[in-house]
Image (cartoon, rainbow, N blue to C red; front, top):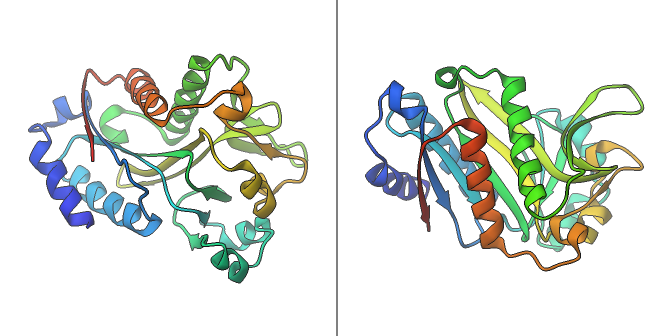
Amino acid sequence: MASGALNALLQNAPTTTTATATKTLGVRIFQSLVPYARAQALQSAIHEARKNQFVPDVLLILQHPSVVTVGKRAEVGMRSIKTEEEKLRELKCEVVKSDRGGDVTYHGPGQIVVYPIIHLREKKLGARKYVEKLENVMIEVAKKYGISNARGQMKNEKDGSDMSGVWVGKKKLGAVGVKISGGVTSHGFALNSETDLEFFREHILPCGLEGMDVTSLKDLTGKEVTRERVEVEIVDAFAKEYGYTEVYTRRC
């Protein structure tokens, strides 16, 4: 399935050169739930194509069926899962070890997951700046919903370390977990739009820390949030933040 989606992307992608690729963004918005394994295979294929300049920078926007993912520090991340794996599987929730950075997080319906596959070397962006810009994208989307106090990267009160993501007080609105290989990114961020927060709270310890909570656009505004509008706001904010002048969007 990943190869079929990649072929469709290649057929619709404009011819790229190093000069044009940094200003061109191909966006694919998936309307059905995409299993985590399929999304990873698709990212891997596009990542290879991007390194070889067969496609421009790409933004995948989708939602996953319920899945708990653990970052590269799996031995730490697994301790942040409150529920036994067998019980989670009974609840139709996978547990997957991922090669992204970050701790443990939950993906599920109502959460918008965004996977940018972009060439940082061509854009002359470092890893830290890239992550800050991902946080800025979510902050700008939150502002569109009247949420003006969202901010990126909090300090861990216990050890002073940085905690990436977007926060409203001590509640996490969006998570960031990335991988950079050969100067090209994969993985990305997840924005809680109308996520089942109770499932999240029951089974996951956000950032592995007691006293931290999660929130969503719906939770903060007290209003229904339409998926399509959030997706459009994400594309618009992402294009502005990273300086794209040509954006090709396709729903599939």
